[in-house]
Length: 224
Image (cartoon, rainbow, N blue to C red; front, top):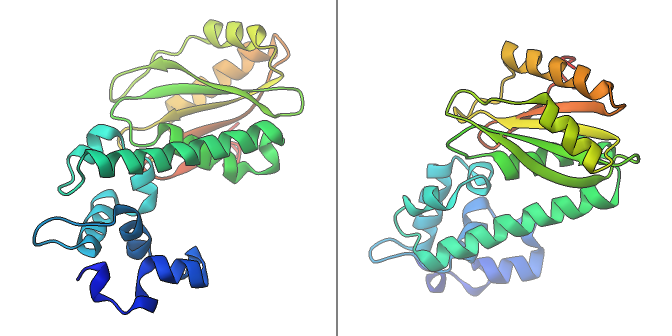
């Protein structure tokens, strides 16, 4: 079925304009963005394929350009539009974190980090550097590793914190396996960095572990 086959009031664009974006199902929302399918496969079928392949919008928002290339029906134009939407979401969250204390909304921090680090094929260790009011100064990807380990040097994190005049940090890394579950090694690393940063009066507020479309706060788990 194509958009034109639907009654006018059931087409995604018309529904959105008349009733708001929340009135659209996931497939309709994505179909509105994709606009067309490919021969023998309508736009609604393509939208369903993309959501199934990515395991929903969370996985889609975390998808890399190379990952999107593997999905049949997503040509360069469609991939570019999806990547643009993802980047707008990242920038919107970053702007909010810069304008208000990060921990006024812990979920916003996790959402931001999930968008930044989710879907990577290799492990990345990043740091959110915050000012004295816990507003975002910047996010820096400081170390990269293999699929299962990253070498993190506390001295380098301390140096950047001092250079940025940061008062606090949120540590973050991804698990390429997709499972956002802190390991014993993650707990040990957190305590090592916490001790090093305490020496220069920089607080570690959290360590967020990112999986596929999700993020787990070690502070909320009582592991900090």
